[in-house]
Length: 277
Image (cartoon, rainbow, N blue to C red; front, side):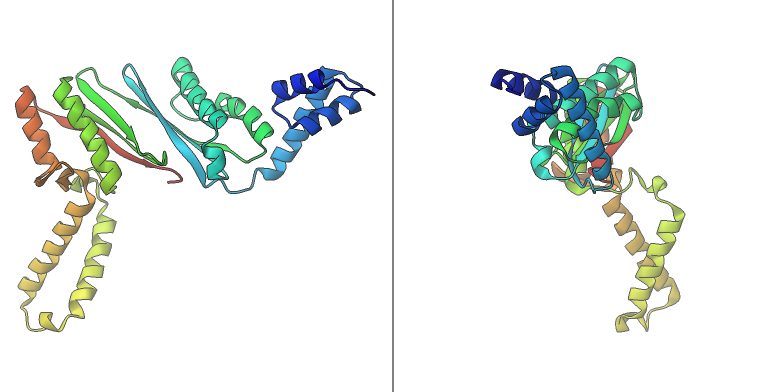
């Protein structure tokens, strides 16, 4: 059967399949474009099922604020090439659209339905790995940041004022979190089990140090506690030295900004997002 190039082109635009695949499908379906499109989809879905177990270690984060909500979507794929594909990026933005439109707060079947055509056309395993929506209180300023690699981002919500200076500080805090990747917001968030484990590690290191052998137990205890305090200050966001002023902790800078705007400020959210974690 003679298949016109215009018909092949139209089927390709409708399905995203390759030119040769479209031509073969039209031949197999005797030129019926609708049947050919269905055939291509069935073949794509079958191939997609085979790919479903392949690792999706690449991808990107999509973040957007809409009113009093900030949505974060983690969309993963197999290769960095696909992660930078314009269609992949467009689908990520569409996933944000539907998240806000439908008021979703987690991954829903509709997210997968939106992604499915791209998986079929590109023939690579993809997943909506995360959908998270963060509320922004009425008296708060929010900001977000996504690093140039699109794999690391942060969202910070500072409660107590909506002043521009507070929003600017929230953005700087996002930069801080992306750069220093704190494990916890504050010391009170650190599990006791983690602290106990770290104490055992530091104690073992001290026991191997000949200089420690002659020191009294109370001195050793003080040194051990000092090591724990230093470690917690390194992994807790509020106790880290601020990225734009290494003479002040984040907490001290928060108080300084609060004084500037005449408000008592606190962190409602300060969260790091890393692709695959």
